[in-house]
Amino acid sequence: MLQLFKLELKSFFRSSALGGKLATKIFMWLSYIYILFMTVGLAFLHGIGGAAFVKQEVDVENPFLLLNSNMLFYIFAFWIFGRYIIQATPTINMKPLLLLRIKRDKIISFSLNKTIFSFFNLISILYLIIFSFTIYSPEKFDLTQLILWNLSMYFILYITNFLNIYLNKKDSIAISLGAILAIIYGLDFFQIFSFNPISGWIFYMFYDYKILVIVPLIILAFTYYRVIQFFKNNFFLDTGLRKKVVEAKQDNLDVLNRFGDMSMFLRNDFRLIKRSKRAKTTAFMSMLFIFYGLIFLGIQDLLGNTILIFAYLFSTGGFIFSFCALVPSWDSQHYSFMMCQNIKYVDYIKSKWYLGSFGVIIVTIIALPIYGFFGSEHLIAVIACGLFNLGVNSYLTLWAGAFTKYKIDLNSFKNSMGDAKAFNSKTLLLILPQMVLPVLVYAFVSSFFGHIIGCISVGSIGILGILFKDIVLNIIIKTYKIEKYSTLSAYKETN
Image (cartoon, rainbow, N blue to C red; front, side, top):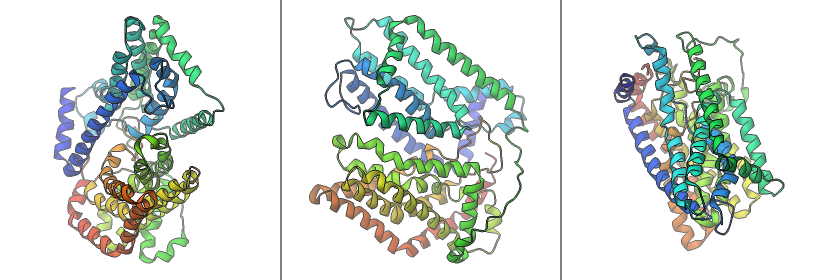
């Protein structure tokens, strides 16, 4: 195990994309620290009966009952569906390891055990521990029962951890689950039917009946065993590494001819999204960010209208933040061939910008009726954020792509030891600094002139960016030319 860990460290520091990896790690750890403090604060606040981030407008009398009433939704919404979107399955470069004298069981155990100590799991456990310490008193709770209840929740947490490995390849299940959760949330929001009493009854039984702790423990052991067996049955050199052969079909896409020399690159991108599972999944998952703003509607009164700008930047920019953040990685397999051809860099870069612009415009149009339902102030904020993403963040994302140097293998079958999704939270973490400028501009202007003028100021920056498109794109093109050879070298690496 120690030797495998050393190999991963060497792979990290020897990579030509070390700078991008270090930047990602820095933003990740800053995010971890922020989430850590938020978790500690919320666990204590909820433990003393505080009403932050829950539906009650006043303090609750029984925080433990409230948590159990919402536990069913937390498990499916955050521990399963949220984990599917946010937490990528840990991967290792298995092909060279299979050629060494290392037992398959050790390689499999090493990869699985990495998930046990993921931040997603540890932060959930920390919340439950602090919450339990806060609510505990000898007069109200039995210590043994409370400890066993915590153990039951930990076991359920790790059951969802290993289920995520299966869901990594079953997008239809994750999409269906997301749709069911949206329906459940809608039924509860409009007070048609609430699952809270059912959830409270189920999870409170783990406190009332101590013997029930065996149930999630047995399910966890069975799940872990099944995952191990699944890996053993699929962990071979010729599994997940062979190329898929399919019948070639021609897509004309003549409508793109109006873009001149750029049309060739745009056609290739649209064909990529249509034919590649990874690209298709990433594009689809980016569309789900349209509903990201709904998460913050409940805390608008607590954090003010400024949080709307942060939320709607993600809602209207999900496509450029996830799919376009991996430009030119989508072309990594034939990037060397492209650089040998007589093509203009300006056409290649402009085609990527137009692709991202199409995504922003389409998503913004879809988001307008969704958030316009909540009032004109939301409608104006969506338009302002869409313009800012179109005129500023689209350039910054494209510029950052010159330093990403992340190779994507579109031809390989990815099993559960590899991440089937190109979409992951690490690419989004590099986008967080782009959120600072519009949020600060809005907060400053709106504090003096109100919400509408604040939104206009954010949208105006985006309009200026669109007007100076050619100047900005020339700067980006120069950066890509400077990084050209280091990018080619990175794409030749096997890990």
